[in-house]
Image: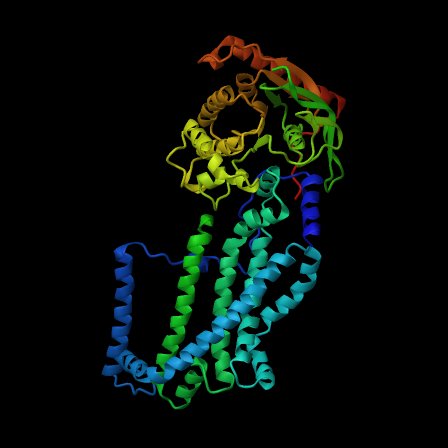
Length: 289
Length: 272
């Protein structure tokens, strides 16, 4: 495959009228949501103060509204009630928190690694890529959650079907974005490396991989978010564990304060994912902005 | 001096394109001695850039023989440094990492080159910017960095493809003078492609004129101006005379082709 890839580039370099200029920003795919990784950046105390002020107004208004209109807790709980529920339920809920987190991490590590490796390998072999792509699209367009009942039938109400579901949800997302990244070949930069006698591996590791990093970063973010959605939804389908299970449980009992407390924990995971990915992007892929 | 380091005899290059083969160069010959400074000029699309790329071995010629330092052109080799139209710095590396990039590819021990590279950086007035990223540097600074990058591994020959074409006129003149300083100090052999006759005459000992496409030898001009170039030479009559002579030749070549009906207007579009 590497040979075929090298030949392809050699061909491009030899036979066609070469484009001697550098095109760095070509070919973003349809799933380009790179803006999500760089959208929020906090500058200065005014902005922080502003963000806090909005939070205070919204939460305060919510609390006030619930108290003034005497909204019953099972209809819409006050922030204070949610906070209380969070503290009171913590001893039982934290187990579920770590179960969901574990599903997510395990499934994501497996899915994302496979997705990334597949992307790197497939973009080197265009023919293979064309054959595999429809199946990847099938995986992306079919909600993985639909497979969970089947997975649970086979693997029981354990953590395993959920890990598989998370991997199936996050892997293709990581892959399709990484493929977009790896396709961004900059012939002028490749020619530069070649002029120093770079090997195919050096061209990959020193040109093509760094060039793909911003898109890989986006894929890792989207994959993680899809993984989180799938983990929570899988919890809801069967087995008495996980944050999703708690959400279903508390809502069935109309314990809305506890219900919202669990949602808060899910958001906490989601926001952490975003912060980690934004930091990764800033460190490894910020050259593009 | 005296030793021929670039020796090309009747080279040609044909590209495949969507609209059939494009004959870019036809039967072009050139000889460059060690330590010489040669410029290649010609109208747009005459194959100047193709010629230089042929010499790098990255886009081999279709015919003819080309020897670099006595060996046929083929694999990329470390005694040749290339400077592109665009600085082509890698945006995810800072200045010093960009400059050491060739050494990294060649797996050379960086510590042995450190002093040399620092000297080069000082020479092009980039000291203090080592940790800056390309996007934080001006176009002129980027191109100076790419010159240092090409010199970092101490090649014998520099191939330069309109290296200052993307810069503004003032910066370009500055870069020309800077390049002459580097040439004098490092004693490299330089083959310099440009479409600016003024630049070619100011820089080179010998100017090769190419005809419009397919590019072939039109005329060779020996530039009889003193070395080092006196300040203000570009405003003197003897300089203008040579420039005008070369320009006239290029215009005549184009007109002749137009009369013959073989002229293909403008540069060919790139096919990707």
